[in-house]
Amino acid sequence: MLNFSDVTCLAIAAILTFLLGLEREMKGREAGIRTHLIVGVASCLIMIVSKGIEPSNAARLAVGALTGMGFLGAGVVMKTKSHVKGLTTAAGLWSCSVIGLACGADYWLLAMLTTFIILVSNTILKNFFKFLKLI
Image (cartoon, rainbow, N blue to C red; front, side, top):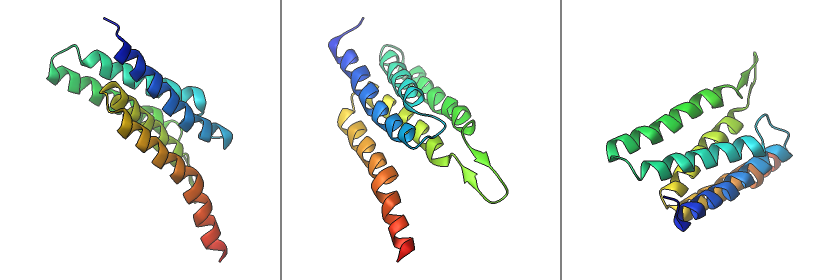
């Protein structure tokens, strides 16, 4: 049965993963807003659905979501002789799955804090390290 709490979970997951996807989209990365949003909302739904089933089966659903992310993440990682590209995007997609699971389990504040930390890492810290290399 649909309730306000579940709708709130989905909405928060959508907003948080949208923000992470937006950051990747603005940098022209392989996976952008739509991919991050779909991963986050679907993972949230998995956790919401899992609340209504036996706990051991609920854990299997969450593990399945994270395992599936391994396949999706592998698709955005490219390796050349001297460079690996797409690791941050793959990690971001995996993080969106975890954020969605957290929202679905009603851990919204942790999901928000995690989103903030990832955004800081992908924007401010990256520029800070570039600045350090110039010194």
